[in-house]
Length: 284
Image 1 (tube, rainbow, N blue to C red):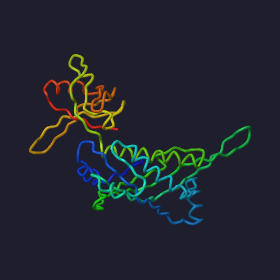
Image 2 (image 1 turned 180 degrees about the vertical axis):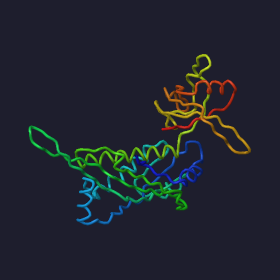
Image 3 (image 1 turned 90 degrees about the vertical axis):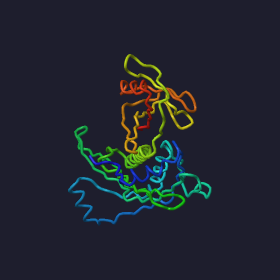
Image 4 (image 1 turned 135 degrees about the vertical axis):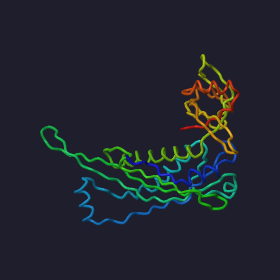
């Protein structure tokens, strides 16, 4: 199965380093230009041959350009740390710490269809199904210097979506998938970070619950999942090792939440008993 999201290595390293300007700092991000590069028409004969070989017919859907833009902005705005603005940043917004803007291109915006026959009341009937295909590349740029940090490509192929009975329905499903994929990507790039304050409930040699210093002020919510890490400095470099997973059970205030230990209870309790510092990062 093809992956929806293709991430350049420079995004993992360049942007990750750039973003460390204060724990859980918010990023103001403007959506500038999103242009549609309409593919060249294959011609009638090529379309007929494709249909004969695959049983599917493709159709350009440039009328959904604005909907793609809205889906991108939605995906950005639903992430933990991005304040998304649909349009060019104002002078004051561009001057904010961490401010960025996006230019992008839509390389594919189409639907593919197939028609299947079935028997009903002794007659052969036909039903057509649709899938929407979307390809978007986003260029993340520094609002002050115009430096391009990375250009991740989000390619929603026919392997990533299911067949829908209406063309519009297929496009709406694909746009929802695009938004959620962009949100997941941004949350991996800009996770929420926190520390384990102290243990709450334990049982024998396992930690069952802990308190963390992440609350409503920084976007914590019930059900949020996180990884638990020990951090050591070796030869001047930071070594981080995951030892467990948490899930927020209750947000208790601006900067405190109660979490259930989902895995690694023994290692977490041992680390707390030894006075080790435990850090956490969101995983969704």
